[in-house]
Image (cartoon, rainbow, N blue to C red):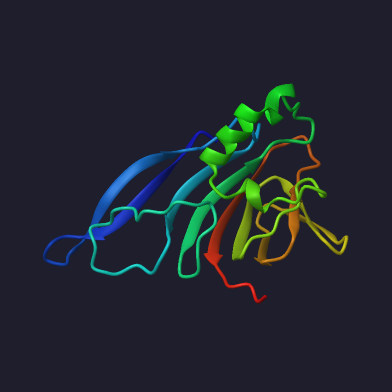
Length: 178
């Protein structure tokens, strides 16, 4: 996936609804996360206020704070994808950190692919088949059309097929109790 069309509505100065923009949003990729594509379709770090002009709000991190959200697609490469040898080089890992700010910091060093965020993630599998793994050892296979609500749990996404998986997420900032 290289891009996806995004149509955004807004308001004119007199309050009439209008198309504020209609453009392709490019995927973000990184040699530090080879085979992974993410399209950040929309996001905000706080509540929206209307009427507005339909401009995309500023946000800085992959995961939103409380009151914020992200609307993003995620493409996971097939199981037979050959990971380049230099994917873990310091330069490529720094590129991944700047392309997907805050994402890599949520991954556990002792469990590859497992990560935890202070978000509620509402997701739908758009194409392919993916395995949701949880820290209790549970694995649930999800196919195109299946949905999941991931409530701040330690989890992983694994593609065991020979086709890419594309998922659509809405990430909503949440509070973790100490």
